[in-house]
Length: 83
Image (tube, rainbow, N blue to C red; front, top):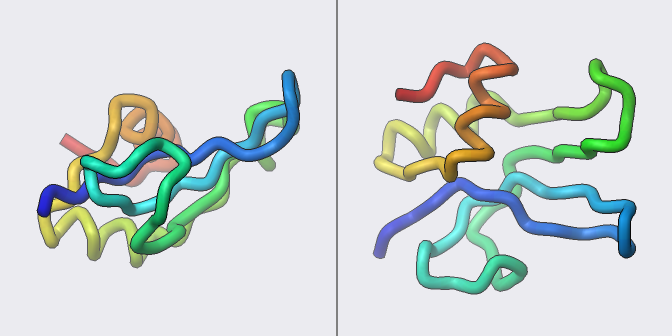
């Protein structure tokens, strides 16, 4: 099973917010998750947009989970460096 760290969309039309989740790569975008590791709210002010559980993300990365392109950008913004 290949595990990915990616975004899961919530909210209403034109007012989205996302949960950063760990999922099976074959699951649909809004399907069942393994674990929720953060929140991303793009409409909020800059310092309140992103909240993450750094220890859980680092643990999943060490186990071999691969972040999506967008999640990788968000984590690098939060100084959780991902190659």
